[in-house]
Image 1 (cartoon, protein in one colour):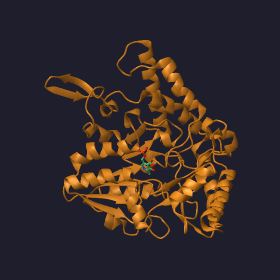
Image 2: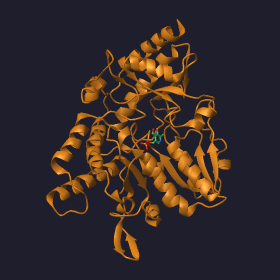
Image 3: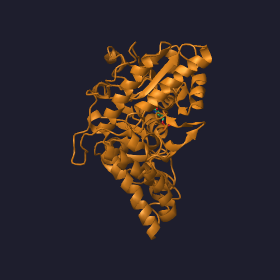
Length: 426
Ligand SMILES: Cc1ncc(COP(=O)(O)O)c(C=O)c1O
């Protein structure tokens, strides 16, 4: 794990300690659920994570005590909810490496954050013949907005390929990221393969050629210490719901100098400075990009999620996941019929672990695991081109987080063995 760049240690960085996932589990009410006859084993964290009690209570508290619209009321509730809404923004700015709050834009999710860039920056700056560089391992959220943009503008899409170790092949990067490249957009961590990409290196290649560098951080922000300035990302997109926060709130970090020059994405209330019948001017950053009533409850209840992660420490979270990923890979490797689809070492790899059983369809496997109380994801994981590239239609994916234990993995392995007995008469 040493290769992943971590944030400079600040005064608030917690000491190194070993997470105790059993203790952590107690903070997550849903993990007491019984599914069928079994206590839930939740291994679908790459899709969305569960929420600690502090987040659930904050949501409740917000509606019970503070509910009001933001930035427009003069009464106590409006002032309190505006303060809480903006307080979370400050925490997010600190969480991603200490950026300015002007650079932190609330969106609905990572998907909308990437679309914001594709619409506001892309529609104005990309033209016919320009190149947009992506990778073969992108989630549809970082693929379809660029396909649509290329289709509209006549720009060319070019992909950095993956090698047999499920890592990006950067040997030809200077031929792929060329001086007609206007934008490079890549995932920091693959939701299918678990691969962590060398974003600093790719960012340097983008900037050498004058291209904008966009990072899809949906799978990295929840699992490792991220410093968007060290990465030198022009934009970095992620979702609260994959990092203990509520659904319906995402973040776009963007460099202020670039955001300043961009037109708004959506128009209406909140994002204006002055409106006349024949004229409108835009609000300051970040509100220029936040038209309409935002997800106030979502932002306010994201705050305790960030506190929770910060108390555990992102480096400690990463250590826990590296250990658990290594354990999962070792245990899955005991099963002769199973092939892991992703790097088998844990350096530069996260805890999204895809696999296939040679005889059982991933959907059948996931349904069987559910009957044992184990939640995993099966399918194309919103990465159809990658599946095709790998010659697959689907995989089963187990993805770990702070509350997962080796016992959870043992239950997964036992259930996989049982599935072989059930489907294959073994
Ligand atoms: C790598 C990656 N990017 C983007 C997304 C989209 O996130 P959201 O659905 O929260 O917009 C996901 C969601 O699974 C993802 O895994």
